Length: 432
Image 1 (cartoon, one colour):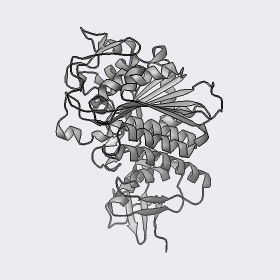
Image 2 (spheres, one colour):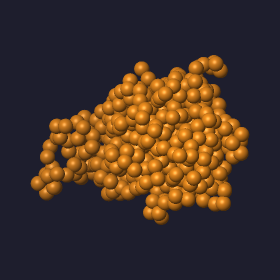
Image 3 (cartoon, one colour):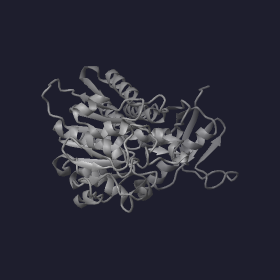
Image 4 (cartoon, one colour):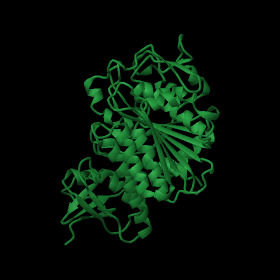
């Protein structure tokens, strides 16, 4: 007898002794997921069924019977994935090509989730960089080179956002620049720069978070984990374009060297920024990443960050938020999100949003001196980044990852990282 519980799909209503609203029922040594006429709802029902199976103590299930396409199998895996366990889904044996794609998504998102879920004791700027380099060296050793600029070297290189945010930590801040170049040509143009917010722990600095707000702040490097997972998936899918992965890594801590409210940061491009909130640090480090992408001449730029609570207030925890002033680039991302069955919603961003955080002492402030940055906080944060985006934002996409982490389990997700956004960004990098 197989050690995996067989999971079937059915269009039959549950037997009379089951709640008629049940989406999964047990029948002997098997489970049956009850489908409806709406396929979008079916994917949700299958993912919820995966959570139910995990909550019932199952550790291995086998996709069985008819009706399982790739997306339905992936929905089951998404729900069945548990925070601490090593749950396993045996893919349907009837479609080897689908199984290959599912393996690629499983391995890439598992790495992304692992990075996000590990505690800050294990994941700090340098260890994050080391793990990412090791991952890609194992995946595409002949196409990878990497540099990690850390500590005082950041200051020497002009990366003042990362340096300033991270200088108070015992773990030196750093910028990882990983070059995936499958062309073999050192002069090949950079098609895409992927930039990730890598705040491996966020105390809030002197704008200190309350205790309950700090509990999940190991996840504040979810942007770095997401773009890392996206590049991993794109490579597994056969990516043949040059991509630069730029991770902006720091711990936002407090000591006598910590940056303070009222400090002025002068960036490499000459722009000055007044710090009015040390807990609005993500945009300060991403500004360096955007400038680096410009130096590399990247045609397309994608950044991802767990940037604002305002985005979560706008779209909830099952969507990510998208910002761009390039309508064609945004349209491609939304199309890819739909194709990859990930929830993504475009929120407003206009050039004038870059003026919404004024300062009397600098070119701009990093926020407004109000709780959450005031009204339109997510758009204003994106507007701040727009100041640093090359070519006035042409080809630039900003993902505010409202759905990257669940503080507690839901009917759809286990507690912790979701890797939501990995598939969309991978497809966007891959292009046509």
